[in-house]
Length: 67
Image 1 (tube, rainbow, N blue to C red):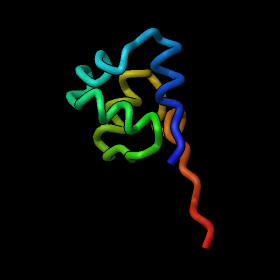
Image 2: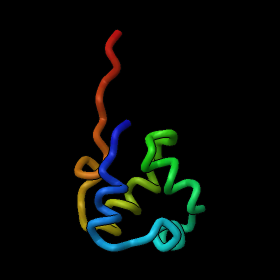
Image 3: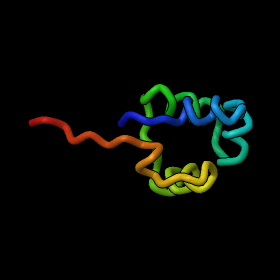
Image 4: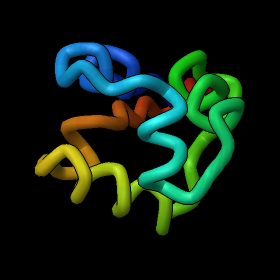
């Protein structure tokens, strides 16, 4: 799943460590999310959306896989 997390974080001048602390996850988790290696839990997606004042869909771009 693609996302705009890194873009939003940088635009707001927030370090990975700061965002990780606010979300109660590791910096590595934030890095993995930004690089698309990890998809967030629903709870984490909601927390991130609230943090940035956006909807989940504005941060995470879901694309159905082709069969």
